Image (cartoon, rainbow, N blue to C red; front, side, top):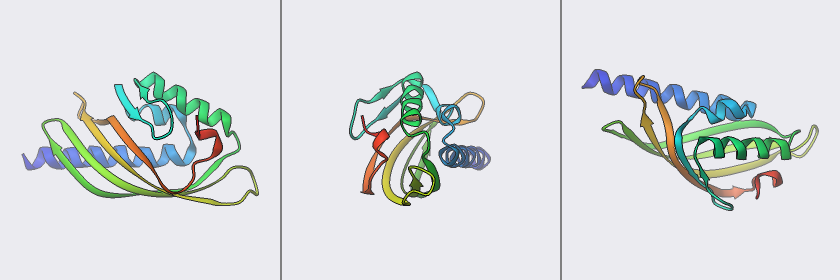
Length: 145
């Protein structure tokens, strides 16, 4: 049991690292691959994304609407992780900064997220459900629907 738990923690940490890298690079393909095919992303200020392809389409729309945006930092603050029977539940805060165009004003954001992860047959973990919101600062204008 302890070995399985350690493997699960390592796989979840790998997914977390992939999330940070994909967020910083704005890699829509990599961001999409973090989700299960039947994932649901509940959005604070617009329609929810139901299914991996809907999540990808939203990510691509946001990137297209803000092509010069550069993410300068993204720092998740993990607060709790519970793993049970092939599912994991975690909540976190995050801070980030970005510029909307070269030489633009640096903007800061702080938010919170609740995530449900699902263990896949290969031992990897992906996001199955997520919801969150901005606590301070604001999302870039192209991220609004």
